[in-house]
Length: 559
Image (cartoon, rainbow, N blue to C red; front, side, top):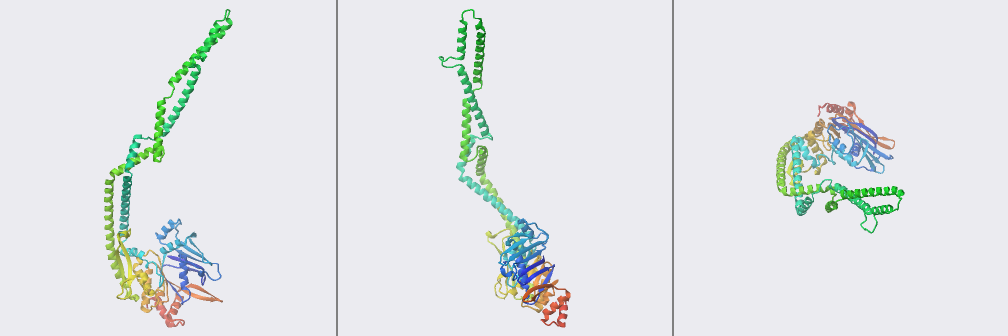
């Protein structure tokens, strides 16, 4: 409910702090006192259009703060969560308007867009005025209100659940059909690619292993070349080129031919013999290394061919070599889906048909229940109309079948509340009725019947009693009080019968201070209420008879 309203420098209001309680609150006062300014101020906090004319003359800015106490599980909590704003026990909507017409909006002291104020306010407060109807006048709300009146929440939830299953089944079927169509378009490519990659048979980690082996083989080849070079230096192929071994032998023979005594040559001969033995050992080792460690040229060729083939396939399919095995699996799956696609589509078609039948069954049951509830709603509204001087009006809750493209989680129906205010005229939409007073009273009748299902906890009626009096005004007051048993109701009224029904009453007055006028609002106690209602009954001159009549109204004896 609306807990409080703080207004600063709005038109004729300098500073005003109001507190509201549950039930019915009556706002009374003479014409022109500024009751409409209160509603306009609340409208600002609720996201209405702002302009510089709202700012009190001579002030830099105006501000309005509305504090609400939403019930547990109220839709505003979901909106706040969506916006990343923590939901608290009190929901504060604030609007600041600059003298140049620019404005800022705040929710729980966090700056927000004005559109968010409007979204939140639509769940918190509803205004029913002679020329500004919202809520019930919006056909988008009618299905939900009818379902709430008829107690059809369970059927409505079943329809929404069936709709979700149907949409899911239809999406799965559409995706399967698209996949098969795409596979059929690419069938020739798929089969060729699978055949080619299957022949290649890429393995996980193969590229890395082949590259390492190739490097090892290439290094082995260079090693063998160096060993062969060393051996060639010791054993030159050109016999004309002297080899180290031949040089050692030639030196040995030369020293052996020395004439005796040649004892001094013996140590040299021993070294030469040792050198020949060491040289022979080195040649033997080099020959063994060359024979045992030499690379297999054929293996290096095979490794390079395999590596090049893998990389060529990867380039062809625009993937990394490491992704080739997964690509082969994917292509095989697409082929398998193509081969088995007819059977899968048939199964999905059967599932979609079953889901459709489930939705149709639930939606038709909801439609039948709605038609029954519509008849009960029409009869309930018809009982409320005559006391409100609407005995010639006829209310219709129309439940019409939608075309299939209009089906949805709320069912297959278009629910519209219609009214005909004169006999012989066809019923029309609520928001197109010419008479503001008639529409306000009709809205009141609807609220009396539909209060149980209203998602909005606070209702405001602006002069719903305009142009009526006596028994009709008393009937309006009685019905406002009935609505206020379930919802918080604020009513701007000139009717003493309506004002007397309020759990609390506030008087709006205009005071002139010097050359400036200001609007003030005063909560009334029992004695002040008696005087105010007596004034409403008698006019400027309050008589004892008017006071006695006011007492009777407040005590309920004249209602």
